[in-house]
Length: 272
Image (cartoon, rainbow, N blue to C red; front, side):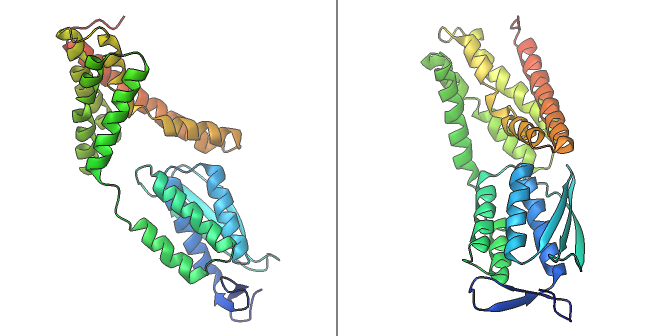
């Protein structure tokens, strides 16, 4: 309901308590929420469902246009008698399943009446300010996962040991990304370093499956999530975002291939 002084009155959290807040506050909160959710790797359909769920809980309607670089969002009263429009730039953040999950959980808490608008804003601030995962733990787990893929694809234990040594490439990726280096250049450099390390299995005759060691040494760089998100967006009709994400994933894959080929050429290993 819209009052004479331009605020929305809705029952949030405690169902018998009315809370007044403006369309501008709602629009700015939802636009920032959208920018973070999209920047952390959420699909467009998840973004739409979460934002609409929260807007309905706050007694508003919402119209969104999702583009690769920004989100255009308009919140309005159910009778369309008043509205407020925000445009937010997509947050440049690494893909994070943890943030995506916590932001989605926040939308359900608001929709189920387990929180109010002010509480949602505080929780949102806590989520985006949370400390990221320990880089050393991520480095260890990513290296073990790479070694596990090598074993899964038929590599022997010597090849697994060589692939585990490619954690140097992943560590280099963490350092370069921390220095805000262009991601495409990061992929080329890290793929080059990892392929050189992986090729040592063939160069020094370590084990009987050196080709598997080389092939799995750069798996941590494969942009699987952008590929999957692009297909999801395409199926949901968000063709601009789908094309953008697909293009981004293809470019990163080409950079990965360029670094891999450079490493193999340096080590004198045939690619075919």
